Amino acid sequence: MGRLIVRYRDGDRIRWGELTGEPPSHPEDVVSVAPLSVVAETTAGLISALDDPLVAIEPETKLLANRLLSPVTPDACIYAQGLNYQAHAAEAQHDKRRSNLIFAKASSSLTGPFGDIERPGEVQLLDYEVEFGLVLRRNLGAGDRVAEADLGDAVAGIVLCNDVSARDTMFGTTFLQWFRGKSYRTFCPAGPVLWLLDRSEVAEAVKHLEIKLWVNGELRQQAVSEQLIWKPAETLDYVASSIDLKRGDLLLTGTPGGVTAPATPRMVEILQQNLLADEVRRDALRVEMTKGRPFLEPGDVVTATLADSRGLRLGGLANRVVEGA
Image (tube, rainbow, N blue to C red):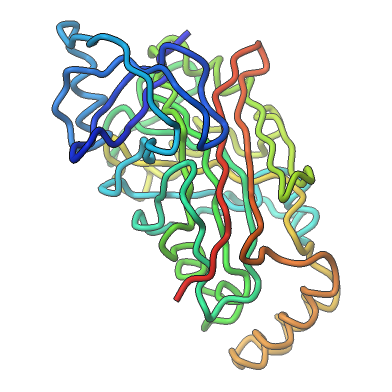
C-alpha cells in the first residue's frame, strides 16, 4: 500500500528513489533503493512528476541510510498544530481549550532523518515533539473545502517529524512568540521516507498511525492518530479558510504527552505575572522547568518511529544533539 519515497545524496547530485526493502531507523542501516528517473528539485515537483505513468524505475542500488535527506524540501511552508492530543493539552494546562491552535515553523529548520540537532548557545530548555506530518498533493486556497471522504485529493503522503523546540526562546520572547523557538536550523528532522499514497488510501491510512519517541533509549512519547483532537481533514479545511496552501507544504499534526516539563501551577503563575517582563519571565521559567528531568543536552540521542498499526513499519529518526553556535 503506497510507495516509500526517499531523497538522497548520490555523489554531487541529489536524487529521488523508491525503497524496495525495509525503511531504516538508524544511520548505519543499509537500504535498498530503486532510483527514479525524475528531475525534480522539490517535493512538489516530485508529486507532480509521479502522476506521469511513464516515470521509470532504475535498477536497484544499496546505500547507507546516513545519505538520506529530508523528503520534504525547504521550499515548503511548515504549518503545525499545538496541543492536539488530550494528554499533551492536559500537561500544558490547556485541556479545556476548544480552539484549533495553528502556528508556523521556518522551513530552514528541516534536516535529514539522521542529521544532528544543534542546540544554540542561547538555549537551555531544548525539547522534543514527535509528530506525523501531512504533505499536500495540491494547492488549497479561498473557497476550497476539505472533507474526510476526499482527504486524498488534498494530501499526498505522510512523513515522520520531530518538532524540536527551545522552550526558553518560545516563552521568553515578547508576547510568547513561538516562531523563533520552533525555527532554529536543524529543529525539524524529517523522514526517512515520504509514504506516498493513492488518493483512495489517505483517509484510512491517517486513522492507523502510531508514533513513538525515545531519549537515550528511554521511551518518552507514544500515541496513535485516532487520539487526535482535531482530525486532518477539519484542520486543513480550517487553515485553508484563511491561508493559501500549496502542493508540497507540510502540516505537522501535533505531539502527544510526554514532553520534558509539563506545566505546573508555578509556571502558569510566572507567565501571568510577567507577561510584559521578558527576561524576568524567561529566567524564572528556566528555574521552574528544570526542577524535573533534564532537557536535551549535547550527546543525547533522540530516536523516533512511525508505523501503520495494520503492520507496516515506516522507519525512524535518530538524531544526536550537538552544541551549536
